[in-house]
Picture (cartoon, rainbow, N blue to C red):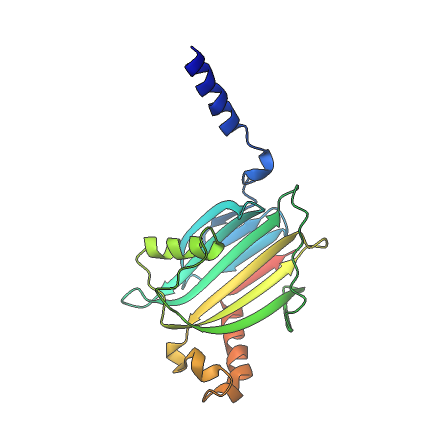
Amino acid sequence: MRTLTTFCLALIASIALPLTTLAQPWQSSVQDHTITSTGFPEGTIKVDKKLTYIGSDKWVLYGVADCEIHVFAETDADKTLKRLIWVQFEGYLPDKPHTYNYDKEPFRTELSGHTYFDRVTFRKMDPAQKPRAGSDAERVLNMLESKGIKLSAEAANVRWVRLNEDRRKELLIIYVENLAPLNLTAADLADGGKAAADIETVRAGIRERAKALLTIKMK
């Protein structure tokens, strides 16, 4: 009897976790390529149907933030990634006294009447380099791999971030594009690379292609 009582107490203790350690109810949903959010920010994001809906996920990120993601992708004939849209709603849990800070980002972009922090980077993708365990990037990579999708060897990445007033919630819109059709590599666009002088033109083109895939109507 004592063993059973001990087991029951341990089971109850394991179940009775603080509510803040558990993911909150979904604030967003996907239907017909349109993401609808009822939390920050409220509204819709419609993704071009050239991209296929890959899936959604929700969890507590690193034990401190509620996180939900929606992923859309386009691939070539051998299932190598051509383009990806990744939309992420994130917010710190009530008992975590953190805020988001992107003030060091030098660029800003206006989307649907709101200001987003803007970053465009270029990267050589190393299959041996795995994302941080438990990260949002790991979740997205797992989604892609579950569909048999491979990353391109060289990629551009656009990240737009919008914060709420107290900077405890954020919307991230991430666009990834294969650099091969541009006949460029990350090294070409780095300082001293053959296309370094054209980097702002390349960034502008990537931003415009990302915007063309999205119809954003957010409060």
